[in-house]
Length: 416
Image (cartoon, rainbow, N blue to C red; front, side, top):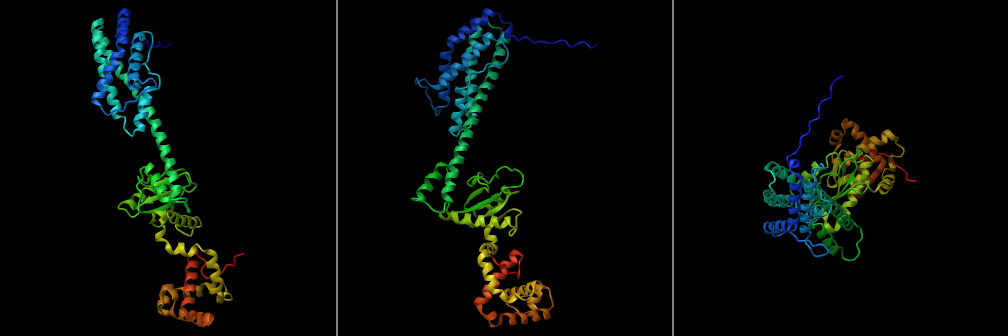
């Protein structure tokens, strides 16, 4: 049978101090705690004169209460440390509130931690004096220093929790205010004076009102994705089924590149730049582009700009009007059969776009010029003199371009 290893216990120097000396040390330290707390607070205010002063209900500084309570808890722990383990902990409240205050004030925890370290140094100086009076052995006093800084870690942990709570609360409040701002920006109809309301809401989140904006609509990836890091200044609302964003000054230096990097892996559309008051119009174009993307009529591999797909957005949206126009304009193709009708439509569109003769049209279509001449003669027979009318040619080109974008060139669809 394998023998079990012996348990090694290390007894601390503080635990070796006679109990009467420990009790006397603790009694003196507790008696001097109020004065020590006031001394520490005076030094803190001297080093950090701009530190805000917060009073409790009785008018006593919260900082003084926290320092005094921290000293008392530490001393009580020292007095009973021969019978307990672990570091002392101050009940949640004051130090958590300190961290919360730093967070709500928009400050970092660096200065707060520096203040805590100063407090530990001043407290150690007083405890060292008491230790000499009581004749506590130096090794035990050295342990007291380590215990003090370990205790400091606990106070910092509490402040960090308060700071995190404040940060989360502020982030939630900012999102709420940002959503209200976006709702007003993107509203089709405004009540009262929208300019004043926009100014007020934008000021509450520190958003400078831009001269122009572009509004984006995003399609969520198939897998769960974190919100894109679109950068400071871009308003993003992920609560919509299709997230929205408002891009200020979309043509500003570096903005397109930043958005491209941030939106990698996302799909969607960004509407045209418009004056701030017309943000809803940019949203309408972005939504229209997304609808076409969902039907595979626009590229879906990333986030596109509406200004780069003007033809598709103009020609593909009014489907009912285009289909009705197609029924009238392409009526001569009705009896040509699907394949021949499509070839004539291709030839007609190439002729309308090139305004050239048979060689130019043939080069575009990749067929023999004689084939084009044959088809053009048929087109003239089918449409007659109308083919030379500028208005009719414009309508024909409009219809045929729209059909080409849809992949339905030469087709006519009855809408029921």
